[in-house]
Image 1 (spheres, rainbow over the protein chains, first blue to last red):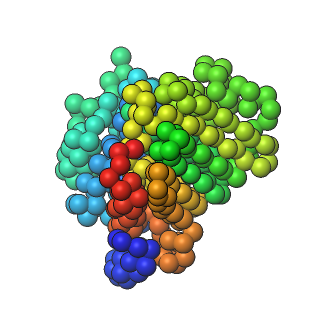
Image 2: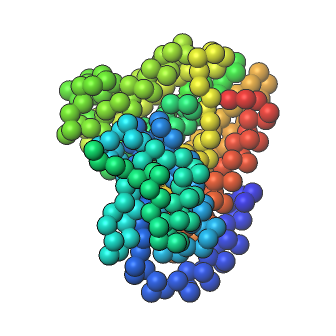
Length: 122
Length: 188
């Protein structure tokens, strides 16, 4: 996109996509990334981006990546929580871009939790 | 923080929590004055005089006033470490202005970093808030400028949400290209 006017072309494309997506808002999967001072300092911004990019690349329209404040365990940042309807919440810790991509592929697409990055409460 | 753009992302989160409708981010790299100035202005609920006094004191935050925790202290420290300065003013019911000035040439100044990423993250997190980015580079004989306003984008988009991935990534590359052009080869 070179100028604001170019957004019109994208807009037309989007209108078609959005039309076919009506009624698909059920069964939404949510990925919540901690985006407070602690998260940002630890590298949450590229992690959030990696989640979004990978979900878009795989055309996962039922995945919503959102941001939260401090999740209360700053030393484990960057953190993310995965909410899948009907399943227990999974908390991932000390993430990087690679981990985010792996979570999309293994957990979201194939349904197996990436235990390497899960939070183990001692 | 490794980049000034990460500080900006963090400070704007305060504005969002303060229920701002409009956040203005002014960035000016002035090579004549060897200064990089960042100003974040919001129309949120502002702070009382007591809270404002404590705003940049690390560790005085309570859960109630968590929005002024470490973020402002970090930003202040980063500016002062480079030989710059920091100012904050606020008025209850009016909003808050945070100003940090960095010495451009200082070895202790972290780079500005990826402002496109910061803007994209903000738009995604708060699609209902409007953001303005005024980016200016002043050199001996030239002033280059780039202005971005989500209100203009939203008008063009009409019913399409701004936080759709395709829109966000177009905006991101738009900001990136324009900042690069505004820099004109200078490293900021």
